Structure formats: structure tokens, C-alpha cells
Picture 1 (spheres, helix red, strand yellow):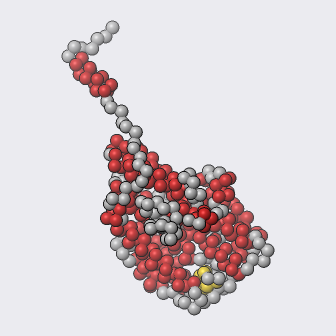
Picture 2 (cartoon, rainbow, N blue to C red):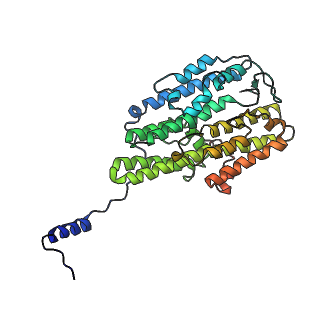
Length: 373
């Protein structure tokens, strides 16, 4: 039998005692509310970016009116203004689609000021049913606004997550999501002092307000992450788990909203003799689908579930491939043959995010409108 040398025994005993006496970490204390003590100071830059996006979209919407022409230079200036600018936060891929000759700001300017008639492409597009479309029936306003929810705002959020996430960064991520520490679960200004905007608005729409939906889960993710940050380095695992869950739920809201709009187009364009108003609304809803999907292309893969290959498959089904001319108009000129593609989109997204049948059914509704909140 071998014995520990007497000279090493005291050290050996100390190690055993130190190990056995080490205090186990207390469970993370998660409060009911998000701490907004430094909110205004921490989020000044993010609110500036939000204002820039609002200004850009407001300018683009002027082109919805027949006879009102948009100016490319103005759109480009609004996109490039500010520190940080929208441009500086946007993925290089999406930035390359927005600005410059022949890109989306330029196409918006060319389409504006005239009238669009759905069908085989002619001219540059124009206003139809209160929306502005290019000659192919694609609403570039949605590729700008909804696309930037992913390509700029989510991209900014995950950039903040790529280094140590502090209390300040947690506030900034919440602000760029479009929510507020109040978490009102409504975008309705009459019902909330700090209503949800941007993707937080759509999270509220997808949430039945029963404490179990995506908005409620995201609220829990933010509160948990903040609590773990405040608790110190011993709780970095809990922090990182909360941030990972947040990213997944953020992504789910984005693509659940694509499912919602696919349902809307199918419903309107399956009707007998849809009106011009229905056709315009369908092209608008369809354009939102394209924007919400396209904006996630080239987001760093470590921070999302869907791949670029899957995004490309969905964009192709939406008749808006990233590398070819869109044929968006076909969804209203040939719905019998084209609408099944939207059903395929729903199925692909259901599989990718493991949505249940009930969730797919629930995504048909705007729960804020349904519940009057």
C-alpha cells in the first residue's frame, strides 16, 4: 500500500477541505420587472437609429400617392444620416441592395409618380390601391422597412452580443428590438405610454396575451438576461442561455409573421373575383413576406437558426429570388397556380421552427386587433 508523504499531507488535506467547503451558487433571482433605471441614458443612440428608420419609411410612403415622385438622393441621405447611421448597422449584403444606381432606393424613385397596372411588366411600376409597386409587382417599401428589421436592427443586436453583454448593452438590445422596459404587449398608443414598435409590434400581434406566447417569452428572456448580468460572472451561463433563447424567439416572431402574411394572401386571392383593393392588399402583404425573409440573409449563422440556403428556397417560392428578376405579380394574375407556393412556404417554416399545428392556426390572426389591445 502506498502512503502520501508526510510533507505533502497538509497540502492534500487543505485541497480536500477547500473542495468540500466550496459554497454552491445560489439560484438566480429573477425579478418580475425589467430594471429601467438607466434606460434613457443607455439607449440614446438606438432611439436615434429608430428615428432614422421612421424618417426613411415616412418619406418612402409619400410615393404611395399617385402623382407624388420620390427623390433618390433624399432616400439615400436619410439612410446615410446619423451616427450611427442605418447604413453603418446594416449587413454589407443588404446595404448593397438598398443604395446606389439601379438598387432599391433608385427603383422606388423610378416607380413613384405614376400608376401601376398588375400584369406582364411594363414601364417602371407605380401606385396601385394605395401602395407603390415596381413593374414586377414588388413593393420595395417593404423590402426597405421590414428587411431592415433584420438586416439592420437584428444585426445590430447580435453585434452587441458578440462581446461581453453589459447592463448598458441589454438596454440597447431591448431598444433596437422595439420594446420598452414596460413591456406593454401592444403597439396601440391609446393603450400604452411606451407602445411596442418594429419587430416588438409584430411580437405583440403574434401573442395571445396569455403569458405563454412569443412576446411573453421574450419579456422573460430580457428580464432573465438582465438579472444574470447584475448577479455577476458566476451567472454568465444563465445570461448566455437567456440571450440564446431571446435570439430564437426574436427569429420565430419574424418568420411567424411571414406565415401570417402568407395566410392573408391565400385568403384574399382564393376568393371569387377579388377586387382591386383585395389585389393591392395581397401584393402588400406578400411584399411584407419578402421583406421579412430577405433581411435575414447573411446575418452571422451563429446567431440564427435559418440558413441562407433555406432563405433562398423561400425567396424562390415567393417569386422573389435574391439573384433574379421577381415575378411577384403572378400571385394575383394566376393565383390558382401560384398560391400553393405560399402553402409550401408555411410548411417549410413550420418544419424549421417546429411550430405546432395550433401555432400555425394562431399565426393567422393579429391578436392585438382580435383582443382590442
